[in-house]
Structures are given as C-alpha cells and as structure tokens.
Amino acid sequence: MKNYLSSYRDLPANVYQFQTKLRNETRAKSGIMRCREFVMKDLYSYSRTEEHHQKFYDSVTKAYLRVFERVGLGDRTFLTFASGGAFTQFSHEFQTITDAGEDIVYLDREKGVAINEEVLTDEVIAQLGVNRENLEKIKTAEVGNIFSFGGTKSEQLGLYFKDDDGVMKPVVLGSYGIGITRLMGVIAECFSDEKGLVWPESVAPFQVHLLSLGQNEKADEIYRSLTEAGFEVLYDDRDVTPGEKFAESDLFGIPYRMVIGKRSLESGAAEVKRRIESEAIPVAFEHLISFLKEHLHVSA
Image (cartoon, rainbow, N blue to C red; front, top):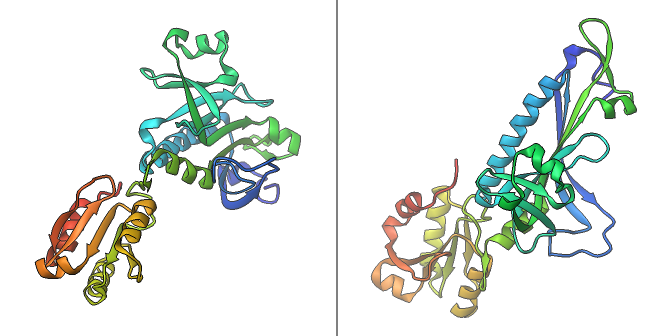
C-alpha cells in the first residue's frame, strides 16, 4: 500500500481479497472447520484518524453480524472480546455456540457481552461492566474476527501519509476476516440431524431437490418449468431405488424435496416435503411455482 498511499487525499482506503490459504496444522480436524487448506475473506482498512477508523470498524462489526444472521447463525453468534496481542488490549471475535467448537467463551446473555476464556480476568470483567455470576461458560467456534492496529503497525512498516498540515503521520490500520470454509463447516455442525445436513434456505446449494421415480418425461417437464422460473433445482433422474434417492436427499439437506412418481401422474400432484418436516404434501403440478414462491423465504 506504500505505492498507493502518500497523502491524506488518498484516505480512507479499503482493500479485500478472497484467497486460499494454508496453515501448518499437525493434523486436520472437525471436518472442514480446521483444515490445512482453507478459503478466507480478508479486508484491511487504512484510515486518516482513529475517529475515522472507529467509524469504519463499527460498520464492519454490524455488517459481520448481519452476515451471520443471514446464514442462519444470528441467534447463536456473539461479538466476543479477546486478547489483542501486542498492538491493543482487545480484538473482537465472532463466536458461534456449538459443541464442535474449540474455544471457551463466557457469555452474559442479558447484556449480549461475551469474553474469550483467555482474557477472562477481574479487571476485564469490571471494565466491560458485567458480573462474573452472570457469565455462562459455553463452547464455541470462531467464525470471524476484527482487529484494530492503530498506528503502531504502520510505524513498524513505514506506512506514512502527509496530512493537510504537512506533517507525516502513520496510517491507522484495521483488519477483518471471515473464514469462508470454516463458516461452512460451522453451519453444517449447527444445522444437521441424524439423517444429514439441513441447509438454511439462504445458503443452500439448491432450493429444490427434484426426484424422478421412473417418470422422467413428466419430471423433465417440471425441471424445465422450475428452472425457467428462476429456481435452483438439483434433479435426480438416476436409475436407482427410491430408498437410495430419499436417503441421499435427506443427506444433502436441500430445503425442499419434490417427488414425481407413478402416484403423481395419477393424482396430478407432486409430493413436496420440507427437509425440516416429516410429512410430504401433494401440490398440483400447475401450482408448484406459486407454492415455491410463497414458501421459500430467503433473507433479504
């Protein structure tokens, strides 16, 4: 960034990347939650003053919480105070409650304040205005973090800019990250049952799983009509048993399963079942599109 930032007129600046990263894990564990290779979203902010930085920092905090809300984790993900290392007292982590997690967090549910176990001291508790008696010990997985470096890191790196008073000053830095692969693993841990995955509609790879039980001509027709209407459909017309198709459909966890079989042709209706429900309902062929438009609720 030294090639792009030299004057106060160049600030603020924000850069981001989505990148495959590697870490030297002794062994991978918890599926894709902690792998040697993973996908990360990084964002870095470059601000003129601490005030400008804090405004952006707060906006990213809100944006991250909105991300976790939209992927279905909003009610179990908390902004958590953690050690800031060498540069500041605190960093902030986004921790999601799950038994598959590796972290321990102490949560005051009433105040919505969470503290990572590594910074749980009487001084920190008093500073954050919580009572130890109200803190609930929970197991969590970190799905994101944000970090203020202030000007210290810029001074070490020689990243300065000339302010409007002609004085050279260090750029105020912030970093912000979401582990995309890890987030996907946490979603899988939080939304699954004994049969398989249960994808939230907002992040499901498909909206509808269409199963043809030997009635491919009609199923082909329905597949075309659904895709033309803009729905994302996974179509299974393989020559395998209905039991295999049903079991794999539950395993995949797509929000809606739609079955076209011999009984469907006789009744003029597909058998439609939500992944989170146990019973299927008949929906007339001509009403399938309107049914899905009414019942698929993807967060805006």
